[in-house]
Structures are given as C-alpha cells and as structure tokens.
Amino acid sequence: MGQINTFIWSTILKQNTPTERKPVDTIQVFIKYFNGQEAITSDYRINVSAAFIGTYDGPMTLKWGFTSLLYHEMTHVFQWDGEKKAPKSLVEGIAEYTILKANYSELGFSKPGSGDRWDAGYDITARFLEYCDGLVPGFVAKLNNMMRKTYDISFFKNITGKPVEQLWKDYKEKYPGVK
Image (cartoon, rainbow, N blue to C red):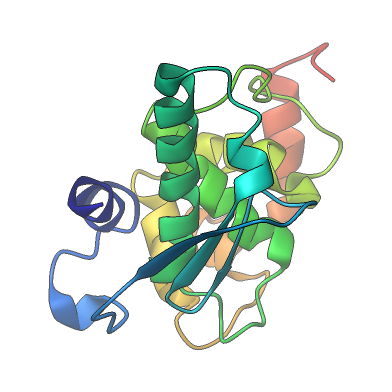
C-alpha cells in the first residue's frame, strides 16, 4: 500500500508534504461478503467485497484486480471532495483517473472521446480529466486542491480558462465519431 500511497500523493494529487495531505494515520482494509459494489470506502476504512474477489479466475488476475481496486479506493481516502459538495461522478472520475495513470485500467475502460457527458462518472470522466490534464499539466491535482473546502463548477474555468461545457465540446471534437 505504501507504493500506492506514494503514487497517489506524488503523481496524481501532487501532495508532496504532509501539510498538503489529509491527516490520515491509519487505513483499514476489510474483506467482507456483500454484493453490488466492488468496495466501499468511508473515511479511512475500505471494505472490499468478498463476492467481487471471488469473480477472479486465478491468483495473477486476482492480484492485478485487487491492486487496481486499491488504487481507486486509496484515492478516495486521500482526495478532497469539497466537504461532500463535489459531484459523486467527479469524485469517482478522479479515482478512475488514478487507475488509468497507474496502468491498472480494466479491459473495456472507455476510450478517449467516449461518453455523452463529462460528468458521467468513472472511466468516462477519467478520460475527460486526462484530456484536461493534457491542456494544463497538473490539472487533476489543481482541481483536487481547490476542492479542499468546497466545490464549484467554475473551478474548471479557473484552471483552464474555459468553462467545463466548452472543454467537453472541445474534447468531443478532438475525437470525432467516438461515442
């Protein structure tokens, strides 16, 4: 988990000093039997579904899948969410962006240009954030830092100079024909 923490802090959130980070002393990971979700993270506790783990067909695919899941869930532990004001789709998109940048995205992860809305969540939003990060290096870290105490859609414009609607339009134009 130390490697994952370091990756999230230094590469995704660019929180290189303890004062920039959430004060997290301990993270607890539990494996419990439940259906519906792969994992649920609340504060510093990650509950992983034993039912989800049981879907993997061998130790190597299990290790890969569990590691991918930890990248996602550990991002939730460390990211800011505007004190619960940020849209869930954006919070999940940032966690999926971490998986994408760590090279742990699953087969079937959305291709660049996919989706109908920037805030569809998960991999669609992750790809859009990747595009924004290409326009403004460190975009995701800057957005995350702005979400420390609150959230406002204007953060996109504050960072890029363009409102999110224009960014989405430009993004879709970059990938014509992709649904």
